[in-house]
Amino acid sequence: QLQLQESGPGQVKPSETLSLTCTVSGDSISRSAYYWGWIRQPPGKGLEWIGSSSYSGSTYYNPSLKGRVTISVDTSQSQFSLNLTSVTAADTAVYYCARFKRFFNWFDPWGQGTLVTVSS
Amino acid sequence: QSALTQPPSASGSPGQSVTISCTGTSSDVGGYKYVSWYQQHPGKAPKFIIYEVTKRPSGVPDRFSGSKSGNTASLTVSGLQAEDEADYYCSSYAGSNNVVFGGGTKLTVL
Image (tube, rainbow over all chains, first blue to last red; front, side):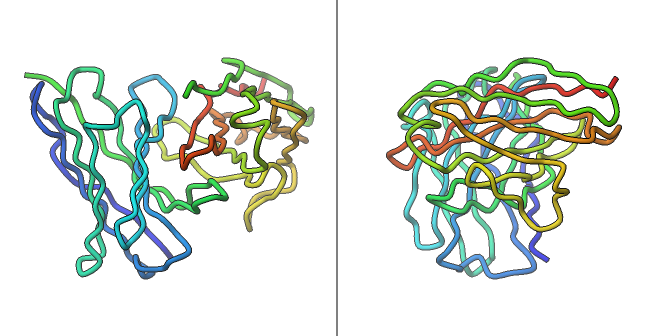
C-alpha cells in the first residue's frame, strides 16, 4: 500500500527558503505512469496546487509561484522535495504531498500534511 | 489561472441528495474531461472520490456521483449519511500542464 509522509521545519522566517521532503513507501517512486506533487492549504482556506514532477525530473509549476518553487526527486532515497524561496506570511499553510496522475488530473494518495508557519 | 467557483456551503438531511457545483471556464472544466473531486474531513488530508468527471476509485460508495455540463461540473451525494459531512473540493486540468482547484464547499448533514 502506497504511503507518503511529509517532513521538514514547522517554522520558517520571512524571506528565507521553505524546504520540505516527502518520503514514498510501499511502491516505487520511479513508475513512469505517475508524477509526484505538492499542494498547500492556508489555514481555513482551500487547496492550491504548487507543482508536480516526474521521477526523471520533468517539472510543472503553478504559474502564480513560478520563479520561487522547485520540486526535485531523489529516486535512490524514494523521496521528492519542495523548495519555496522568499517566503512571506502568505505562504503559511499545511503542505501536502501526493502521487499525481498526469493528464488525468488526480491526486492519490495524499500524505497527512505538515503545517509550515512563516514567522520571525 | 483562477480558482474554480464552488458554493461555500451546502446542506441536506440524512437520506436526501445534495449536489455541489464547480464552475470554471472553457479553458479548464469545459475544455477537458479531467475533473476530480476530493472529500476532506476536519484536520485530515483530502480523500480522492471522483476522477474523469464521473468515475469512482475503488472503495468509494456509489452514493457519490459526478457529472459535467458545459463549464460546470457537479458532485452529487445521494442517501446522505452523517459521515458525509465534510469539505469537498473539485479540481480540473487547466491546459499547459496546469492544475486548478475549487475554493471548496462545506457540506452539512442536518
